[in-house]
Image (tube, rainbow, N blue to C red; front, top):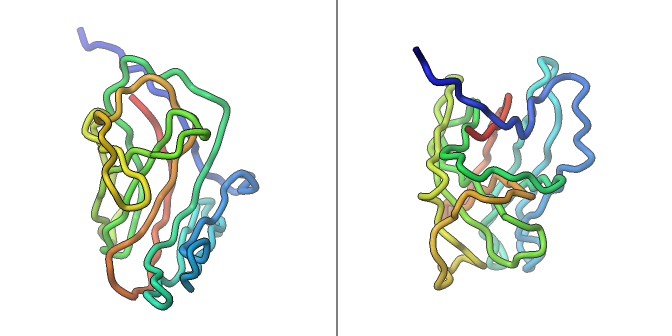
Length: 167
C-alpha cells in the first residue's frame, strides 16, 4: 500500500489569479536599473520576465509573494512546475515577512515544462548577498516566497510558472 502524500498548495496560476499580492523588487532599491514584471499568459500561467542590468551596481530582479502564515512542519520539499529560458534562478522563502534574511536555493530552467524539486532543509540563509551565521531552513512556518534572478551578467529573462507547492 502506498503512503498518501499531503501537499500544501501555495499557488496554482490560472486566468483568474489575482496578481495584486505579487510584488516586484528589483535592484532599483539600491540604484540599479533592472526591470521586470509579472503577468498572466493567455494560458493562465504566470510570466515573470524582464531585463537584468549591471548599471549602477545593479544585477538582480525578483518577484515576491506574501501570504497568511502556513505551518509546514514535517514537509520535505518545495516543488515548482515551470518552463524557463535556460537561465539560472533562485527560489527564496521566509518563515516570516518580518525577518531580514531569507533562505535560497538555485535552480536552472530549460525550455520544457518541468517540476523543480528543492529539499527544504538544503535552503541556505542569505541576507544582501551574504550568508549569515544561521542554520539552513528548518521547515516549520512559511509566509513569503520569491523568485529571483542574479547571475552577475546583463541579460533578458523569462520564466513561466504554473504552480508552486510543498510536500
